[in-house]
Image 1 (spheres, rainbow, N blue to C red):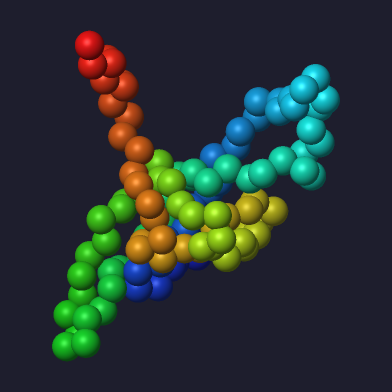
Image 2 (image 1 turned 180 degrees about the vertical axis):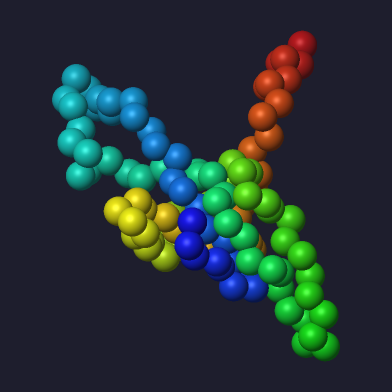
Length: 105
C-alpha cells in the first residue's frame, strides 16, 4: 500500500459481509444494507504525540480485526479499493482469533 497514516490514525479495510440479507422474505439490495462496523487494520501511524513531544505507540497493529463506531471514519479509495481512516481512540475493540468460551453453567 502506498499510503502511510500519520500520528494516531489507522487505515482499515472493512470486513466484507457477503451473506445475503433478508427481511421477512424480502431481499434487501446492496445499496440499502448497512455497512459493517468491523475491519482489518492494514496500516498504522507512528503514535500519538504528547504535549512535551514524546510519542505514545499505538495498541493496534496491522492485521488486527477491530470494531469501530458508525460515524467515526473517513472513507477513501486507493487503486479502486475502499478503506477507512480512523483514529485509534475510535476503535472500540480488537477481536481476538481465540475460540469463544463455553457458556457458564
